[in-house]
Every structure is written in C-alpha cells, then in structure tokens.
Length: 344
Image (tube, rainbow, N blue to C red; front, side, top):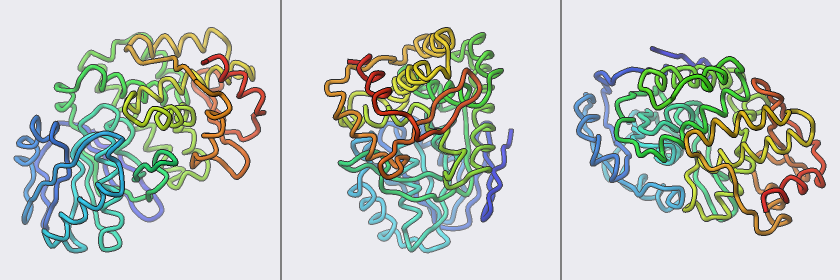
C-alpha cells in the first residue's frame, strides 16, 4: 500500500509493505542505535543499493535527543564527505527519526533523508509529516525544523521484535488518531485486538492515511495539525518532570489523553461514558492512565514552555465526544487547576 502526501513545496510516498530494494545513486549514512542495529541492520543493508553506505550508531532515548548527539551525527557526515546530494536514512524509532531529520535539515543547509521506522509509534506517527528536533532543559522538541523526508518505508516486519511496552506506546498514538478524527475507526479498535498481525497492519494504514490527510491540510501546524498533539500538552510536561527516563513517549501521551479528557468532561465536551471508553482502550494495552502530580502550580507553569502555547495563553487540544476535537486557548486556569488536582 502506498499513501502520498502532497504539500505546497514537495510530495512523497509512504510505502506500507515488506521492504523492497531502495536504490540511491549517492552516498548514504544510516543513523541507528545499537539495539536496532543488532536486530535489523543486516536486513536493511540487504535492501539498499547505494554509491556508498556508512553507519553511525547513537544512543537511543529521549535523554539523548540533544545537540551533542546532533554534533556526533554531523561529524560523521563530514568525515564521510557527504555533499548536498547525499542522503541520511533514519533507522529506528521516533527519537532516531527526529534527530536524523534535524541533522539532515541543517547539514550544508539541508539534504534529503529517508525514514525507515522500526517502532509502532514511529510507523503510525513520528515518521510522517516532517517534524524534526531535539529536547533541552526547557522542554521537548523546542529546537528543530520542519523538514520533510524523501520517502517513508513502513515494514511491519520490524514489529516482531518490538518489546510489549514499546508496542503499547504506539497503540496510544493510534487511539489518539481515532479519538480526534474518526469515530468509526475508534469503534473498530474497540472490537478488534491490535496484537493480531492483520489488525495492526490495518490500524497502521488507517493511522498513516489520517496523518497524511492532516499534514496535507496544514504542514507547518498553523491550525488543524495542532490537533495531532491531543494528549501531548500534558504528556510533554510529564516527560520533562521525569527527565525523559520514566515513561516512553507514548505512555506519557496516554496519561496526557486521560488528563485532556478529564478537562473535556469538566467543560461538557465529553460525557463520562466516552471518557471511560477511551481509558478502557488504553488500559487494555497496559498503557499508563494516571500520574501523581507533586506540585499543581508548577505543572501548570510548565505548559507555557510548550511550543503550542501562545504568549500568555495555553493551547489545549480537547476531544469533543469521540471522533472530533477542538483546539482552544480559552480554557480558564481554575478549570485546568481543578482537573490537575484530580491527578495529585
């Protein structure tokens, strides 16, 4: 299956099938991490036909998504004498994809890169749409660029070795897509087990189609695309508070979805049954749904470091029932604080 994204200045395909021969008539650098390299690098290299190929392994994990790691990637590229026609290949999860894309966006003012995502989360979300970046002490992905890949190759084969917890983190992003944009898709998720190989491939395809449609409407996140951050406004604060080493990104998003839904319930945008249905699907895959906030005021202040905040206003993405959502910066502080107190 091939899904196309068409944007004002570019277009590219997302291929969802077993990896076939990738022909690249230039120098290639594969960016990966030791875990993925040990499991799958040989498989990838068998499918790449390039002028030359080198590999750099960098540590994986949000705590390593830093300028220092970007420096390491760029140094490798300079040593290998890459030029403006060369290509980077991101081979790993969302962290590897974000860093590789960012490095590609700034190497000699921008070169092409290809996404070969190996985690469920990166296959259904992170590899599509051109968001790249790194973290710093102020928050997540606050330094980065929009830099679209040349191609995305999604091969379900890689999921066979994915730890259960990593798989569940990806499911959180699938649920996010369904709750925000597609009621029928959410109902299908309720009725089907995503651990089944056939079902997860259907869910991947549906999620990619949804994200491709959203990105095609709004590449630079001026409006609709912000809805893809449902659960992230809260989740990013949780990741920052826990130094990115307690929760996987999808796990923090799962908790963030529950927090956002609690706010939707308070604002009468969802009813209790709808909130419980979403939480049940998260819990079905052992995705965390609760977080103990130590300091409510401090948690609230962290919202203002988020990219989605507008000056003195916080932008929230809230589910409206199941299958729709709204983006608003008109939520009263007292309402947010009351919801946060429910997570103390």
